[in-house]
Length: 416
Image (cartoon, rainbow, N blue to C red; front, side, top):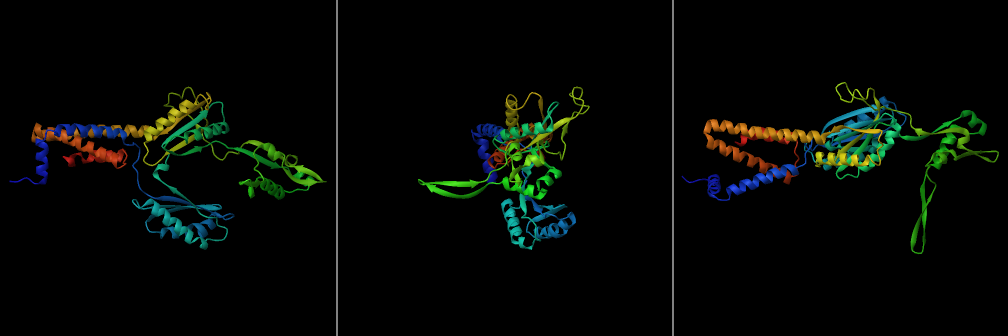
């Protein structure tokens, strides 16, 4: 009886003296590939999503819903490939969330969305702003969260430290986005005094227009000299509180009226719109030392698509440690409140152990049924097959996550 193609291939490797060497090489390459493949918490899912923001100044939530949001829902629902459409309406604006089917080409989906929106903009009610379309992806979810808190610094000071720290973190390779949550920004507030305004012959509207007109810069043309073109700009932005105080907002009896004469200029933190605090639960070792909640801000860090979450988290944390000597005061604590790189590494390592356990279990079952020779074949062939699978993961730019590794564990019996 003649062997088929599979039989001839098997017979070739059985008789070849290179088989053992190839087995060792495949195992080494597979194990090495497992260290090169990026590790992350969730798998890369090709699903196109986008948020559409639309402003409607002066409109109530009901008007926004009936005149803007519902027509938008009908419009985007007719785009081929759209699976879900969600919306929310608020005062003077609304948001529509569009999700395409899994597997739809992401770039083509966004092009179709942009084209459809542009084609029907003339049907929008007067006063509606141009829609802002912001694409979303699975990698927009922060994989690392750093919380800055202090017993002696308030949220305004922590926010300024976090803003500087964010600029340094953004320089790390393969960090796609950083976002500061909480804390108050610096703000120069102008509190007008109506009695002083009346005495100076001014009103709120005229003062507001003067402030707006003086906080503006624009190009006014250019001129050539000695084969060099010089651009001319007029006006400038208000940069300091002194610039605001010394702003001339009118005249009275041929004398200039400065803004500081009719208003109080407050330079400091803005009025709070939200609060972020940090504390420790009863199960924490620090609960006895820090018994209350403290002002805090959180830096959320997202990675680029296909990047290794574990390596990026290690680089960012190392850079933060280096900046403690120059940027972060000793009184400010930095707490890691989210680290998907660490959890991803732990879960991947755990699933790799489960994979080894599955191979041993299958080998034991085969040994009971077919003898030690059959068990030995399974014990050698299955790891080599998985080693080549890991190599293909690396070559195809796949990532190691709980889904891909669980698939390997699940398929162990099928491979045998």
